[in-house]
Image (cartoon, rainbow, N blue to C red; front, side, top):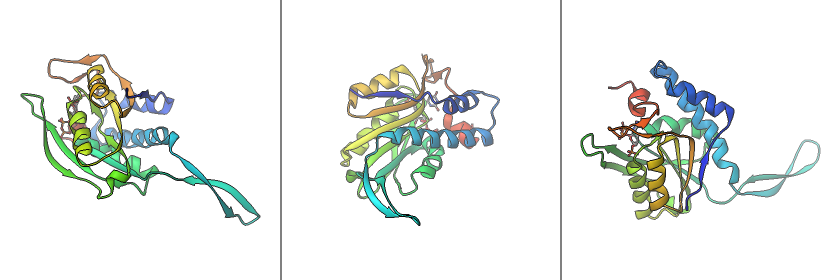
Length: 209
Ligand code: PRP
Ligand code: URA
């Protein structure tokens, strides 16, 4: 069963409040999503493995640690996932970035895949699928499936806000994928938007509508 981690750090929760607020404009929304993504990267990487090495300091030798184990791949789901990539790269500058393009058909709400471009060595990488919204779970579910079909072994999912329905879908279909969230909201409305949520993440990030 997937572990679900709700990141309760006060800075994350504070910034999420302003992300949710409908009076927050595009520029500030984008900046806040970027900042929260960076803070989430810090929390999500707590369990990365490290190894001990020795370095010469100007004074003596120090036994100290560096990251070891699998390298990271970031996989934003287009298009709203793009808004979280730069923030994560601030802490994980060597990560490779792959893209999965999906949109929810407005009538059927079924995700439609239109683009997949992934790092060639992604089977050796620990992948983090990124999307601000986990609503019905259809998009994240299909993105994870697309990665597994192409050989991905270790995947985490990171979203700002989730509906319980979406969390359930991922837990059922991808029990090996741990989920990292800032909040689990009440549910979905008749258009499958998250309630209270933050509205349409892509439109708010890119100023479309
Ligand atoms: C939004 C969001 C997720 C998806 C979540 O994208 O960024 O990808 O909806 O909904 P689901 O869990 O019900 O699948 P959207 O389809 O609006 O595409 P966009 O990012 O290109 O606007
Ligand atoms: N996609 C969004 O951008 N927002 C929602 O609330 C649900 C899906």
